[in-house]
Each structure stands twice: as C-alpha cells, then as structure tokens.
Image 1 (cartoon, rainbow, N blue to C red):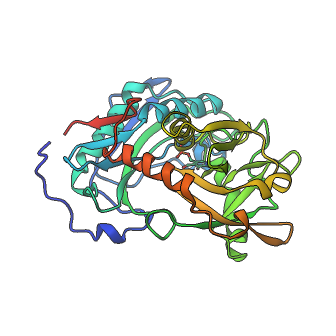
Image 2 (tube, rainbow, N blue to C red):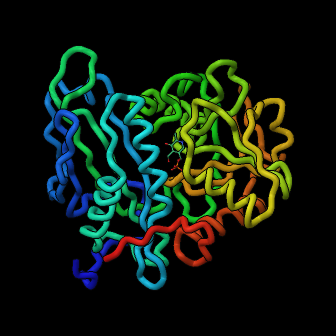
Length: 348
Ligand SMILES: Cc1ncc(COP(=O)(O)O)c(C=O)c1O
C-alpha cells in the first residue's frame, strides 16, 4: 500500500453520518462451516438469493467501529477486539458461524488500508466508520439457519451522528414501544432489533426529540438505552451510573467511559437498574454514548406527556461529561496517553 496516496477532496468538516461509497470492501464466504480466505472487492452490491435467511428471518449481525487519523498520521482503531468478540456472541446466538478473530481483524484492516484516501485527516473532526457484517445468504424457505454466509466489511467517512460537532446536547423521548425483551436479542448487535425501532425513532422525532429512549420491557420503569446509544448519568461530580439490563447492547464506548471515570477521574461508578421517574430529579448530567454518538449530553427527556429538563435547566453539558468526552476522544485520536492499550494501529 502506498501510504502517500492522495486523499479524496471531500469537505471533511461538513460530513454528516451518511454512506459514502468508497473504493474497496472486504468479503469472505463461509460454506458448510468453512471460511475462505476472503478478498478485497470493488462492487458495493451483494448478490443475495431471494430465499436467503437474512432477508426473511433477519439471520444477520453487524458491528460499528471507527478509524481515526492521529496527528503523526497513524491510523488508529479503538478496542477492535471487543467488536470481534461481540460479533461472535451475536453469531452464536443466531446460529451463524463465528468469524475467527484473525479473519475479522484482517477484513477490517484491509478495508481500512485499501481506502486510505477516504480516511478523514487529523483535525477534521471526521472519522472513517467501519461496518463489519455477517449475513446468511444461502437459499432457504423454512425457518432454519443458512448454509452459506458472507462476512463483509465496508467503510465510509463520517462526521458527527447528531448534527453539531463536539458536545451536541440532544433530547430523548421515552418510547411507548419496546425495543427488546429481557431474554430476547437486545444485548446482541443484530438487525432484528433495529427495524422495530424505526417507528419509535419517528415518533420521538415527531415530539421534537433527537432519539427514542427505551425503558425496560417488563415494567416500563427502568432505563434501558437510546435507539443507537447507551446511557450514562452523573449524579454528582463524583458518581457515574449506567443502567444494568439484559436487554441493552453492551456498548464498547460505555464500558470505556466507565473505566475512564473509575481510573482517570477517580469517580465512583455503578452499573445498576435506574428507575427513570423515581431518580430523574437526582440526575446532574445525562448523556448518550456510542461509536456513532460518541458522547452526547441529554438536555431533556419526554415522559408521562411532558418534557423534563435534566438538572432543571435543559442543558446537561456539564463538567463531568465534558471531562469524559475530552478523555475519550483524546485517547481515540492518539492525543492522550493510552494506559490500557486500547488503540490498535493499522499498519500502512
Ligand atoms: C442499540 C445500540 N446501543 C448502543 C450502541 C453503542 O455501542 P458501541 O459503543 O459499542 O458503539 C449502539 C451502537 O453504536 C447501538 O446500536
């Protein structure tokens, strides 16, 4: 790979969170339980049989991660091992073949490297979003696992998920629809969890909210998560809590923020059920977090037919979230020390 290849002339700072067709993607195929080597291809389309279980029964899972350019030009991934583990947990849950760690990492690295020209430069505020996916593509009619699977990795340069860059304050509306059952598939990154959320997001946006907030499906009391992000809450300058639930995606961003809070910021951290109505008055700062959302403070929440301001002022971009955000993106962009070796450099 010629690392001197010229960057595309995109207006990096104005990118939103949209698909941009890049030059290459990685594809590997599993037939009867055996993976081939995989290769880079240029076509962004898939040939999928009309009887494919991924189309009818959502036998598929995916991941989301980002590559960032450091000031010295290194290309950095953030904790990609955890994406590999999480994809394999989803694969096992949906009776799909696991993607060996070596294949996962090779697919991700090759897709990033081959699209070097599309990786946003340091300081642009943008990054390269990476979407590994595993889908059951063989023909089938009855409800049973596919015999053929494709592991594909495509990438797209992206800007902030919510419109403004940096710490954008968002609002959430509690959904009347449930996202996932306590013993369902909510803790796996599978497409089946997301189609049902489209209507919930639309309804939240009709109320003027940025995203839907889901409460637990059993009692409708405890905070689960937002449509595409987990929730963290500062109860005071020294206490960070996050919902414990079997129905939410174990966000890699959230796990990292909780670790940063406990180690670097020396905060008391706790993962426990959080009763929205009973505890809302105690929230000093609230935020949504995820690979796409990064860390977005939540200013207000719609529930019981009214808007409720976090901390009584609707602007929860307070000191705790600011510090967590600065630490997280500082590590991800290679600007701050990485004491726990979370970064993985893609050799060019
Ligand atoms: C439903 C849901 N929750 C949480 C997250 C955040 O997870 P992560 O931090 O691993 O990106 C995502 C994806 O970004 C998601 O789709």
